[in-house]
Length: 160
Image 1 (cartoon, rainbow, N blue to C red):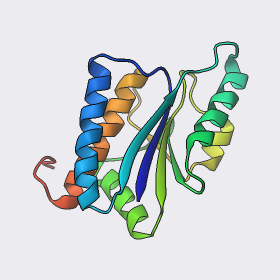
Image 2 (cartoon, one colour):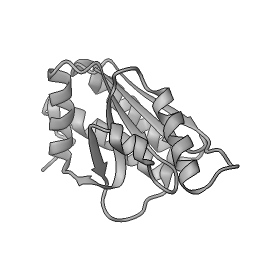
Image 3 (cartoon, rainbow, N blue to C red):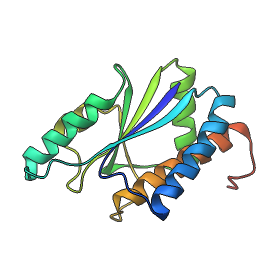
Image 4 (tube, rainbow, N blue to C red):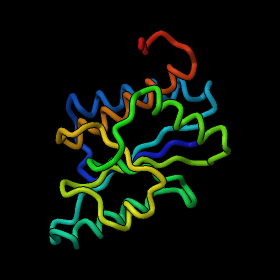
């Protein structure tokens, strides 16, 4: 199963980007051994000429356009379910075991996801009630993907 991440926001250098890349590299290494063929990240800048609902709609269109056709969509959303790392790992393993070809995680812009993305999502997942900077959300998602791979492999990285 392929894992895709699509995010609104600039691709920058710096420690946050290095952290994202480090965890994605770790996840790729474990993932190949666990039946996950690839973990990819695509990013784009939000249109500056729009705001409000029009901006969320356009961001949603751009996010959905980057994903593989038929990908199971998991939207990171403040109104989503706050799940444990173990449940996150079971979610990934369940999709993989059910033959899902691609799981796509989407991270919206500063105003969140529009209704089109929320309606298309198979699952809404939250990383808690706090508001997080987008670069840190990418790092948190990359770390949780790596953690899920280690949980599924029985590696001691995750100590419950």
